[in-house]
Image (cartoon, rainbow, N blue to C red):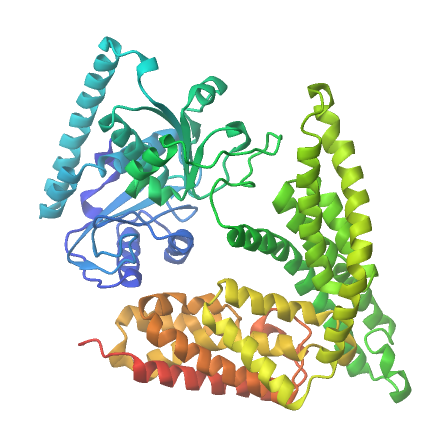
Length: 640
């Protein structure tokens, strides 16, 4: 299938009106719907935005390729759009975007469609072709340009094949590289990075073989022979790829966008002899552990988030179940002398309490287990789970489990090195016997020692949290709520949220956590502030931003702080301080009033689980109004 068949004249916008990213996406998605290529605007747009959240599809050099593959797409389509003035699309090079190729692929799209989409990506590497597209004024000209470019590309490939067959240059005289390109959706960036690397290598007189991990599966797969003779390895990927096969090789590990924008830099680094030597884990599963790139801090953060992301469902579901048990007992009544049994006094309440506590019981083992598995793959699970369980039974709590997870992961890494000299005949038994047994032995005894100081620290922390009140509660609430607004889902936000969830288990007897109540309130303020600002200061927001402001009221009430990200990204110096001010005020007031919450998520949907629901909502509204007004006053009018 030719690109011309996917790029319909009716689905072209030769004069895009939008001036910002959100507006451009809305305009192109609407056009897709108007020409009948998608059946549901929201479903398709959600797919586009989900891809943008991973990394901008504004590739630089004035080009953007937003894309989505979902059930809303009727037929594979490429929508072409051109902006004369340029759009602030948050491109990777920070420059305006003029040419847009919005790709819509249906679920289960066949290889023919995917190959055509890959061919589109490859054509856009040619700067002369891109300049001609910028000068096109009619849909007919655009289609003709692509027809000519496809014919020229086919001729070049034939000539290249003939040249390769006739060359007298020995492969032994040329440097040889292998590379892997991959992006989460595998439609555009994967193939653009492939073509950029191959083109650059050809200009430098270097032989390269590039494996693509795209939507159509792994193509041009690297063989053991390819890897063995390679002088270096480039991995330009934003998702996990099979890494252990590169053990012992100089390896450059970068985002897929670097493969598109910095191919010469990657090639030079891979061949310099200074690139880190990759050390695999001895398994065969895809893994990004022991990455040849990334700071120690980045790896620790990744490992921690792996544990937290797996732990949260247990905390959220278990916490809500326990909170419901308290509500049932409060509703049915509990004698004053039996308040210590609140949540399990009546049989119906006890059902919910038992289920919730069962889920809570997995919280610390899951946290530690998946931190350890992030560090050392599957062998780390058993030692991590055990470390978490020992932290739980030993009174070390959340902090003890966190330490136990890292401890277990690095113990397994130590054992890998220790057993690396064993005969290959024992390779299979290491993962099922040596690693779990010796890992559990070492980690278990280390945890018995760790539990001693951590239990004392945990006990002191619990006593502090249970006695929170007055000024202390207000200050802590203001700090954590402000952190929730500082980077809207980034590391600072996550740190505050994780701390809040960790306090729930230790404050059950008191009816919930003041800290968690402040954290959730602080996270609800920024999206609600956007709604308020876009209503009160309409002259400072575009029509598209005002529409997005309406959706932010839903996100705010649902405790989805990330709803404010597009506004913060477009005007961070005004938005972020405004959000922090309102969130910190709300968090401080929540702490000062001593409001408690047992559910670690849910926003307005768990408001019955808040100790003072009406006051809580009022305090969130106060913070949102303050942030919204401050942001509106600071923001410049559109004319400026």
